[in-house]
Length: 114
Length: 449
Ligand code: FES
Image (cartoon, rainbow over all chains, first blue to last red; front, side, top):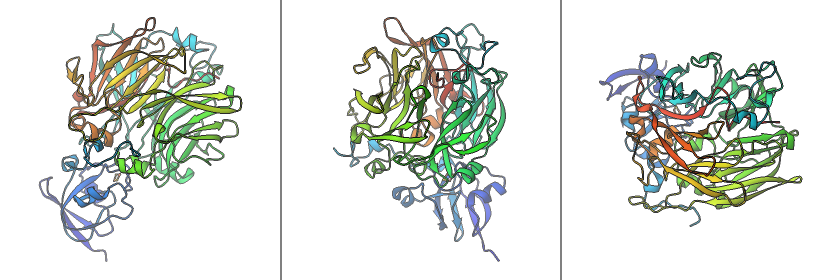
């Protein structure tokens, strides 16, 4: 039997989702009638990013996040499957700090050979 | 606009320039990355100054699936089919970069475009091993679309071949050897040539722009010249640091010409290219220096994101999306383009924060020129994730469309004070407007054979 975990969408009035361990959280939300951001649906494009507040996920094939973004707790809901009960902030509202202007970051180099 | 005896478009660039003035314009409008969880749409904009609805969106055609990221677009037929009366410029193809879907919109009733069908991205991936559709060109009896990735979003991609009923024929090219990445292309059968450029793999550029990826060689810096009939690359030129991220490639409209221009977007240089016997050459002709901007520790390139050539092949226009200006160059001497006009709209240098009563989000990005060369239409969004990095306000306030009036006799540009479409005020919420097309053809789609 598949194990199911409780995934709580904190910034959507704490709505609880029951998500099977092999089901992407995006798909579970859609099943519950909640349309979250989506685009490539394979982990390559960042559109579906959300912020993990507590818990853990597995995201096979999720390539769209760099180290900084992963360390900040961002996950990709199109590929993320829960491995325990989780609390998330979702939607574009959860994207604060996701994007950076690379020319605003001290230590970045441009042109690359300068 | 169609001759009774003939197919779509015009007999020559000179004929195209004499066409009636455009009254409608189509632009894609996106909700990806805005917080509005709705599909992207095609917006029909009234550009007829005599019309009561001038300077507003008069129709919206919603795509069937959410998350496409509509980007570029192209016609089922163009002036290359002018001698074929069985063809009509009736369908606009709208690829979704993120879903790989190709939405086909029927514009038989120009003011009420309707969704005709969708070539499913999943089917394209399964049948051709390609994803990330970008540039659409009509190739007389075929349609070719540059694809930026393989089925998993990795480089180098290839070219998708559709027939005129939008069936997937397969991959167009015979041999991709030499291509690291894919992006835009321009072709000219009369000289048996095609030129293609390089962005990066979808999995690299879709999440956003990272200078570390540039350092790792994950963005392109080569252009490729093709034997068009043999469908293979005959020469690739690696431009190094001067030619990082070559994007839009344009050729002269005069079919006797075997020359054109492209911009290296990140290096912010314009190159000219030409066929030289059986060989191909390039030469850097414009170099926009980086600017040190307060609050930005890293020198900022201008980022030339779009470039085009007027129908009479006399002027070159391009947009500097980070600096915020649009420029016009006289290209009578192609090796020495002469700047003849410049306007500022938005941008990170802060030179024109508000234009025509609207606070600009973004800066000049996609451009489209009227057939007579007198009106340059411009939109301010680049790509949702890149917009969110460089102009984060756009997701809440939407992008804008302006007209820049161009002096084609003396040179010169001026922002038209009577026209602005603020996509921040769309009924379903702010959206991002991007590439533009006219029903009758334009300077970036029509090719004469
Ligand atoms: S939708 Fe593209 S990474 Fe999830």
